[in-house]
Image (cartoon, rainbow over all chains, first blue to last red; front, side):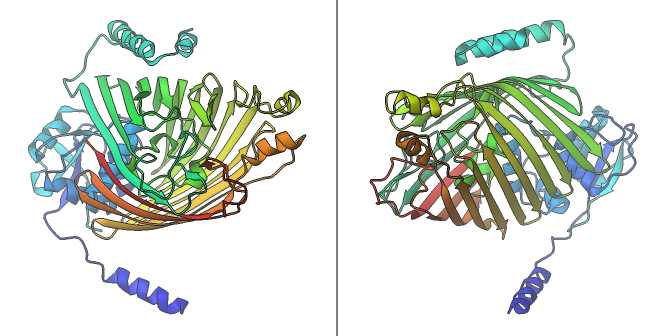
Length: 144
Length: 398
C-alpha cells in the first residue's frame, strides 16, 4: 500500500510540466564590481534580501521589474520555482514586519542595464541577448 | 539617554513627533550628502476581510488573547479582519523611517486604529541593521507579521502556537547581524525594550505596558531551509487584574509583578518550488504561580498547483497543571490551562494579483479543561473540548 502510494507520487512528480523554454535569462552585475560568477543560492540570497553584499564585501544593489513585465515571472520561476504571488507574499512579510523594503523596480530591460551600469553594486536580470559589454553575466538561469 | 527618553514617551503622537525631529536632526548633522533621487516616500497597505464560525456556543473562539470576545456558531467578521497602512520615508540608502498603523478588533472591544510600528532603521554596513522606536517583536518566528494574511498560507497563524502571545510591540531597540558562511547565512538578532499593550481578562484589562522584554535569536539559512532558535523573556510590571476577586493571600501567591516568563522556540521552514513546510516548537516557562508552563507546536505543509495551494496542518498545546495554595488560587490557575490538538485543512487561491482567497477548516480536539485559549468561561460541564471552526478570508496588499 505504502509502496503503491510512493509510486503514484513519484510518477506524478515526473509528469509535471517543465517550464516553458524561451530566450534564456541571465543575471548581470556591474562589470567593475569584481564578481565573475555566482551560484544560484548566491543570486537567491541577494534578490530576496537575505544578504546585502557580494562575497567580496561590496554592497549589492539589486534591481527588479514590475509584475506586468513578463521577465519578472520567468526570472523567479527559473530561480526558485515560485509564482509571483509567492514572491509578493514573501515581500509583504518583510515590508509589513518592518524588516526591509524590496529592491527598486524598473520597467524595461534597458532600464535594468542602465541601473546596473550606474550602481557599483548593481545586479539585475535580462535576456542573454541584451547583456552587453557594460555588464558582466554572472549566472545563467536554467529552467527548473 | 536617547533611549531612556524614548522609553518614557507614552503616546503615539508624541513618539511620532519625536521621531520626526530625530530624522531631521540625523539628516542635518550626520548625513549631509543626499544620495540618488530614488523613491524617497512610500505608502503601502495590507488587509484581510474574514468571516468565521464555530460549532460550539459554549465559549468564544478568538485569534489570540488580545481579543476580549470571540465568535460562536454565527458567521462573524470580528476575529480576522484587519486593515494596515505603512508609510516609509527612505531618507538615504542607509536610513529610513517607517510608521505603520492598523485597525482591528482589539482589547477594548473597539476598532480604534493603533500605531503598531514607528521606528528609524539604520544600516551602517551591509551586514548590520539597527532599529529604534516602536518595534514589532519576533518572540517566535513570524510573530511580527501575524496580521499580514497575504504573507502566509493559512487563514490565521496556528492558534495553539500563537494564542499565548498577545504581545505585539516594544519601545526599544534591536540589532540584526548577518554573517555569510559560504553560500549559507547566519543571522543573529537581539532586541530590548519596554512592551506596550493591554491584555483583556474577563471584563478587566491586564496592563502590559512598561514590562521590560528582551530576546534574541540565531537563524541559519541553507539554500531552501531556514532554521531558527530563539529565546525571549518578559518581566511583568503588573499583577493580573484579580484584585478584589480573590483573598489577599491568594492574590499574593498569584502575583506576576516583577516575575519573569521565558519563551523558547525552535522553527524549521522549508520553502522550495511548490512546497512550503513549517515546523515550530515552543516552550513557555512562567516565573509566576498564576499561569501554567506550556509546550506547543505545529506542523504545516502546502503544495501549490497553479494558482491554488492546498495545505494540511496539525498543531498542539499542552500546559502543565500545578496546584494552587488554596481553592481561589487553584481556580485562577485552572483558567490558564490548555490541552488540545487542532487539525487544519485549507486552501489558498491566488485569485488575482495581490489578492488571495482562503477557506479553512480547523478541528479542535481537546480536553474539557482546555479553556485558556478561549473567551467566556463555559458554564460548568458544557464545554466538551471539541469543536470545528470554519473560516473564509480575502487577503490583499496594495
